[in-house]
Length: 266
Image 1 (cartoon, one colour):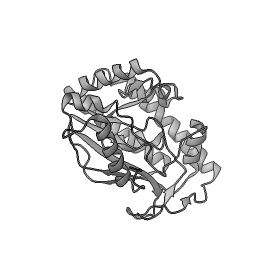
Image 2 (cartoon, helix red, strand yellow):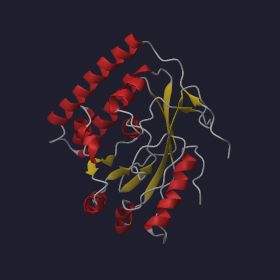
Image 3 (cartoon, helix red, strand yellow):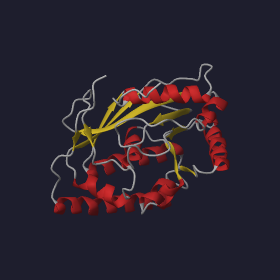
Image 4 (tube, helix red, strand yellow):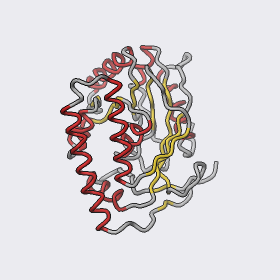
């Protein structure tokens, strides 16, 4: 497989333009919080999904991030979407293509402004260091799949630097196994806008990993001018006799392929 091209960090936009983007983003987040508080408790699922998709697409536009979609997102549930995880932008990008109910780490709930918005959109939060909490979330996932939802998880359990796909934790796949639900792999990559879909050039501005702070990551995206997020949807698949660990390994390899990343070691 070809090696990854050099990381791309083009000349940033001016601080003044980035600050204007920030003002517009704060206003957009505030409007989203109003929608969640005012309309979500009483709206039906279809209306909620439409509002989430429209809000996420507008958020990407405010940030100056282009969305590129390849393949067919799920048209209806039940289905469990599994994707690689690079940035806080991942949720916005996926929701702009196909609104999902996400499973996220509990600390996401405490993000400034965005945490309340993510929670209001119906995200399920998990304390990954507590085995008992994982069992609770798996049980809740199974209930939502039986109700016909489209759920999305990041089985790596954390963000990566976008150069590879980390090992998948298999426990959340138990909900799909228990309910006989198909799983749809999704490869996600950040690239320069001008890059062709098959190009392997990366754009590192959205990467949110290690000791990076959320505010620093958001500011880096606000200053970038040529970011595109590429979503490549694979075909839904069922376990076909695999246990959850074997299935997780196969899904990791497929997500890496879809994202244009090196295949994981055997």
